Image 1 (cartoon, one colour):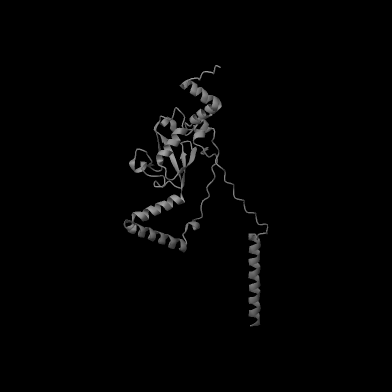
Image 2: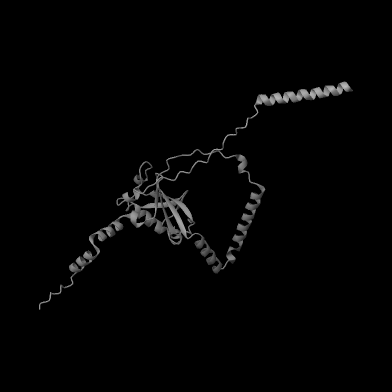
Length: 258
């Protein structure tokens, strides 16, 4: 009785068997995920430039005057700050580590918004233990293929540049850089052609397709007008004249009795 010959295991046969098991659709999905930054870096948000400019209300100067309680609270806060600075050299490493752990527990994540020149903002949440390098990597992966080789700088106004090449920035966490719990970083390309205000930033098409408008804050309901009749100036003046006449009449009566 003849048995079928065993097919030798070759790289070609192995790949064919694997493809038959997984199916070509699974391979295509994996390839799309590798090339689609919108799928790789989800969840994230891309905000369109604000389209509505709300008029600013001039604040009442009386509201800017600090109360006595506010002055006392500010003085106490400044006194505590001065005392902490004096006692800072006395803190042990254990105390500093405990304070640092409390901060990480309070702000485990850091929301970063990267603002482009046309006011679009790319938002993503990072662990507070991450370095600024992770933010650069995220932004670069979201750029188009043509813009990826071009260098850019993340900074905070007026002139705080957060460069990966800076050792004082590179080795610190996002919490150490005082970016937690949330911060807005401006982006500037070294090529001025990409810093235009009238065109979209050079983001990947799948990233641009996710852009949404900023949620509009609902206007506060206006107070209902008071339906009670108000006294006009003429009515008030008439009442004042009548009161004056009554007073004069009473004075005249008193004088006549005398």
